[in-house]
Image (cartoon, rainbow over all chains, first blue to last red; front, side, top):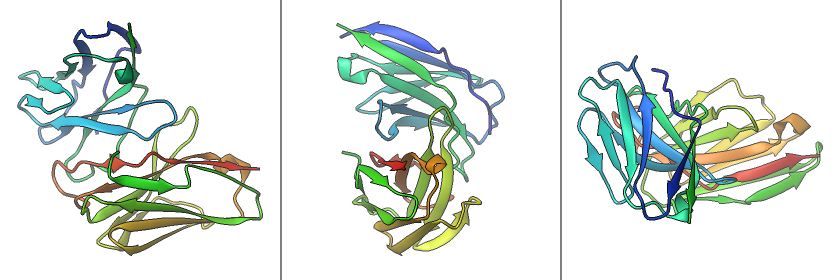
Length: 111
Length: 115
């Protein structure tokens, strides 16, 4: 599975968009990009995933560059409850249970 | 609420005790998983069940014994554990193992402390 690189931490003002970047320059053609987050002491929460096209759901948007070497998770209107560690994971389609979480980005949303 | 419910949320047990962790999913999924998350370590996949059949045991010591009576329920039976087994144990489910674009949904986890 491809390795991902994320900033260690980011801050965002409440109500503003939070844009979390992820580099995955060694991604293979059939590997998906998944985003999860984990609030302290809780299980990881699925956010969104994509292969090539941009994706949007009720939680977030995922923007994948045309060369697929990087992506950005967008939380359009961050709230204090969005404070968490966000993980970008690249996974082969047949082994999406083999999730390698890495260190992620600690997003702090402030009032 | 993720649709995957784990009980108990917290468990303290002695090394000679026998206890069980329970997981139930309400998502209509056919695959269920046990993961272990220790402090300062990445998530470790322990067991995989697909349509009630165990398809993967990731070299887990025999003091951890999983049971999957049906596609909605998963247990992890614990006996003669060691203090280093203290961790967050996460249950998860997905539509089925090996499905392209499969999404794993996690429960809140069971915090286990072995004393």
